[in-house]
Image (tube, rainbow, N blue to C red; front, side, top):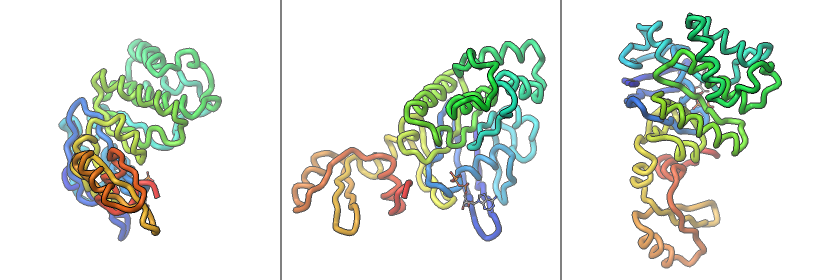
Length: 279
Ligand SMILES: Nc1ncnc2c1ncn2[C@@H]1O[C@H](COP(=O)(O)OP(=O)(O)OP(=O)(O)O)[C@@H](O)[C@H]1O
């Protein structure tokens, strides 16, 4: 559904995205995980035609992103990181405006707007001005807007940034529901739990490069499913093992107090880069 070959973006002497290549299959929820500045947003901006790649190419639903602008525009829905709703309009009016821009015929447009307002649980707030909405409601409305023209692929840039844990979980449910209805999802996140809980596959980015890719389980398997975490006076130390028995054996050989736990995607990142996703 998405094919990316050698995608690269330079800002002056800074290489924000470096030779990115990957394929995302139809029906996947794929997450780009990495710390701030890793190049996730720049990747999404290139795929959604908001910024031109320095090199490389990408195809979405078989259409070349740089060449087939109109077809790509109809194949994708985009929810940017920053709120870009019209605050002076109501929820329904925001959707109406988008539907007109996409030239969806009136009857179909109205049917779809009602359907989506109830899908994102905003039907009872449809005629309120957006500036009265909470962060979570605004985010849900942006998702409804992105889905209005029935895109095959939805891009979500940091979909739960700034939301409280409960609202974040509701957002995950919403993403899963639309994925079950057939939408392929590419999301970016710097939240480990979000990538683990929501994504079928994850691509880990660091300094513009894709440094690992796979299912959360396979990525953790690669580094070792069990972690012995200690402290050496200067900071935390990590040792990785394939089985709990090996981890327990190693922990027993140490004199200091340690914790044994299952690995997370954060550990994968630490093992590959020597740094944390969130410093
Ligand atoms: N328009 C721009 N001009 C110059 N540098 C830029 C521009 N946009 C992004 N960058 C730089 O490119 C690098 C990658 O940024 P990008 O926003 O893609 O990272 P990110 O992983 O999405 O992080 P975040 O979640 O903070 O947006 C950063 O070093 C950033 O400062």
